[in-house]
Image (cartoon, rainbow, N blue to C red; front, side, top):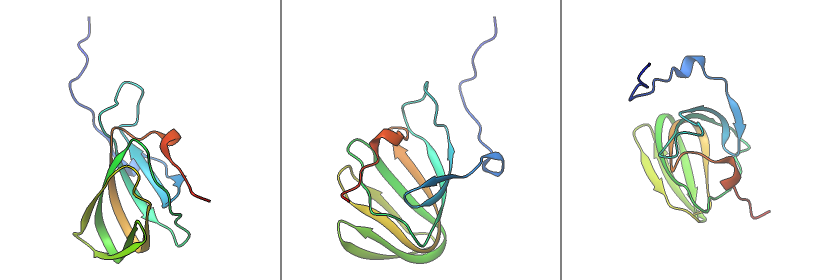
Length: 117
């Protein structure tokens, strides 16, 4: 009997990008048997859309670039090293030439992406 490993490893160099409201996301640890959290590396696009989540809290960390986060209509300047915790219900998007890490808690669920328009 093989014992299941008590960890998971992801190589973002091997993960394909997926279109998302913010741009293109490489998503790790999104699996039916993991509801705790996931991790995404996101390249922000010029056409990022304001959206919100009813259940997920997200933590954004800026790896590269500068721009701003639009959070409930407020523009908050960000650059490499900035981080923000986004609670459920907060309308948000990232704007600028940015590469971010996004940690959704609980793990990402595409059914929990909502738009006002």
